[in-house]
Amino acid sequence: MLKPNFIFKCITDISSEFLHNNNIKGLLLDVDNTMSVAHGNKTLRSGLAEWLSDMKENGIELIVLSNAKTVRARRFGDSVRLSVVGLAAKPLPFGYLKAVKALKLKRREVAIVGDQIFTDVLGGKLAGVKTLLVTDITREEAFSFRVRRKIEDFLLKRWKYER
Image 1 (cartoon, helix red, strand yellow):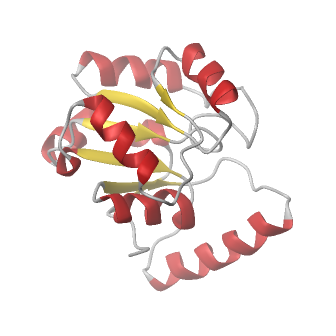
Image 2 (cartoon, one colour; image 1 turned 120 degrees about the horizontal axis):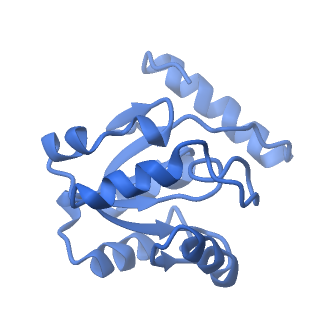
């Protein structure tokens, strides 16, 4: 339930060719530490704008899925010209299902891209979508994040994946 379907170093390593080969037609995109450089930061990951453009040009449907307050999530979505499902309550499946419905795709045709096993991957599994885990850009300093990251690192080593 926690093991991601695929792991990538960063979001920009996910190619449209890979998505087409795995029958993924739409992506639910996490914001913090996946598309932006840190939790709560608006600075985009290097190469993200070009990657988003490439995805759109290759017919991949995109939507932002974030636990952030709707206003903050919408501001970010507007900055990258994507629709948003904010206050998603990840890992609960409701936000995922709302986002899948907005994409007008079947769950088996959709994947979540995120940096956390206990929110993005678990929620994706509960919602019945594929899961693409990416390495976090920066390590958060809050105690709860540090604890979760230690557990995630342990699991990844056990599954023989490196972060």
